[in-house]
Length: 210
Image (cartoon, rainbow, N blue to C red; front, side):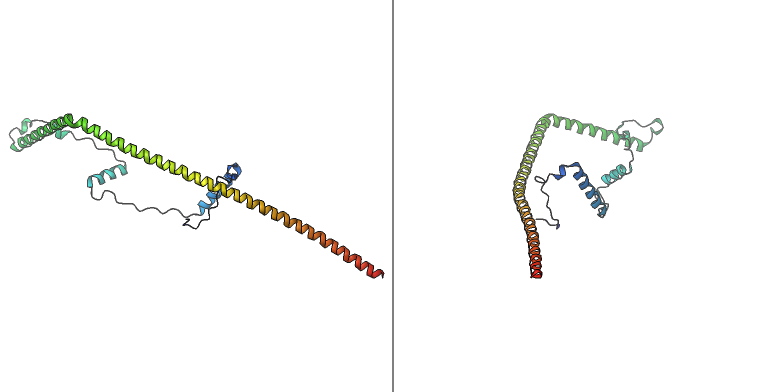
């Protein structure tokens, strides 16, 4: 059902006028003229993105402003002893010790992750591939179903328009026949009117002679 009040009378399977370049150009010019009278689309308000995530919000602002990505900080991954000038500073040695412990824990976690990957990585990868294949299969089936539905819709539309075209051709033929008969009746009426006028003139002439 049309909810916008537009009267759609297009029959693309029947009307072939659009195949003409002149008609197509005229249609496009009418569309452009109509679009020129349409009000501009409303501009959506800017939505605040990543309200609850400061890190993503800052990254979004960086990309929006076109700023380059900051260089990766590798200083914290360096394992260095305090300089000779700070060799007697306990706080400096404490920070160095904490950094060494942090690096050791980091390497330990990396080794644990590598061991987990070695034991479970292959099966996890196979499972992931299987899930992706199932998702792909479902998407392909849905796509095939929608394509088939689209083809069926076009078949029904073509059938309905073909039937409508036959009815329109019959109505047009009846209309043409009706117009032809009206013209013949008008011509016959004109002929009768001339005959009546001629008879009236003859009667008037005879009455004057008597």
